[in-house]
Image (cartoon, rainbow, N blue to C red; front, side, top):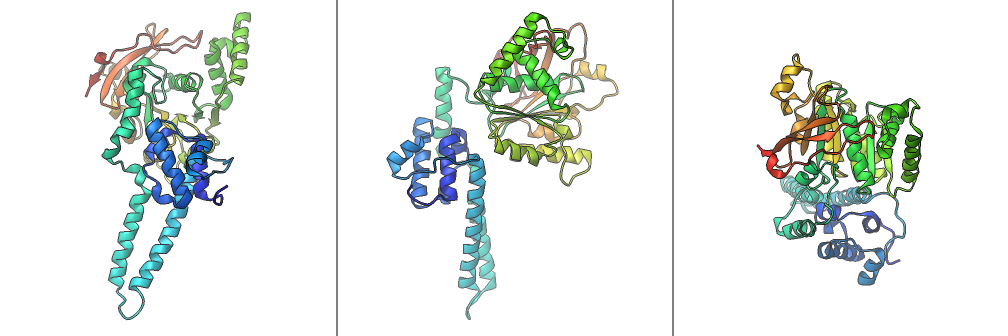
Length: 421
């Protein structure tokens, strides 16, 4: 292989083997991290992604650049990017300090004030480079927008993580890294079932790597619900051992099919993932493409003990550090209301989310679930869109069928049925 197995080559090999177009574009220009043969590889990967909409293989990279990459690199591109960035910052800081000392802090003409100005200027330039992924040059808009437009015009599969409800999927065109979706409802409103429905759809239909974190229920309970949903058998007879022979057959057939799934569906007990940082570590280690957190308001915080500030801090951490790995869908609670029936008539809004205003502010999409059990809700439930990515509000109905664990949308809404605020 041409060149040592450096952090840079490990990063590039990881991108080539398991990277995503969204990462290459979303991270911005990382040319500053590479030099020599590594720079040639990176330029080729980036140019190939822009021109063809796919990432090149290692063989293609070697054929065009004359440079080869490690055959097997564990961990995700995000992991190696963090390692490479840390190394770059460390070596750059050492160089800046050394240059500053030589130029301004030695000899008879030393000038500490100029040294300080030089340090600040170089440190600022380094900081801008490090946050290149948060900056976007509009001159590159064609490379970002056109591939998605072409896919939409051709009627190809949406480029984001779908939720399984046509109204939302048509409204959002799929969820992307950086998106936070919040389900909000009172206890026992059905948040877990709807979270599982969306997670199962992304996994089984879109073949995405799913990480589902349960803060409220033990793993066996989640597995039982997911098994019933996948096999389309009643949850109650499954938990009570009262399935019909046909139901047992569907259960076995469904769970045998699960063994052949091409992507994993990871379920983590909240006892093992008590903080956002824990989930970040698991998401990176498991290369999750989408993350679901049931009962996110129960997450702990390493330093904050006040419940309200803790929830606000965790919502900010989820948005800033977890969603860049993959879109996050989380469930929260509405505040307690002295007159719930009156509130249901008047309607809930973002101000009714319990503990923290930050949840509504940081979320790309907020869905309200607040219908109580009644004759009307035996077979259907209404989902309210309290906030859309572009300001949409409205509602749609889903099936509430526990005999076949069917929570599909009843009648998809067309765009004109949604209101913009």
